[in-house]
Length: 105
Image (cartoon, rainbow, N blue to C red; front, side):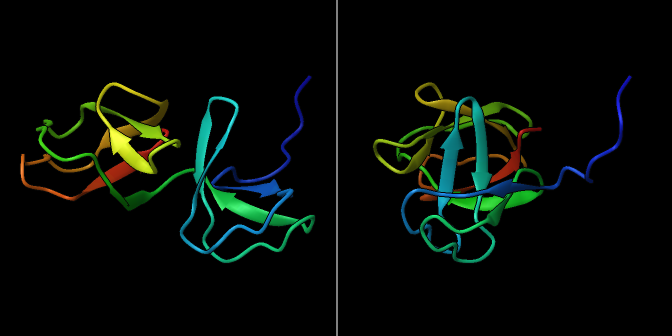
């Protein structure tokens, strides 16, 4: 049997190092965003839903609703490299330097 634990839009997270507000964090195959700073070794929370503006790799397009990944090595949203982050909340144009991502959508 399952028992309800929490809403699920924010998940508890204790980082080993400082996490800045707005920082994108990958935990296994889950992508979250810190809505506020989290001190190292201190319980905080990560948003795992909602629409977030993220930097993106340049030179590509994407239709609204298409899959988008978070490429932690470069710190950008990417169409084909990285951890699945969600879907594009609006179309991405070739000149865009940011994208709107519906997290884990």
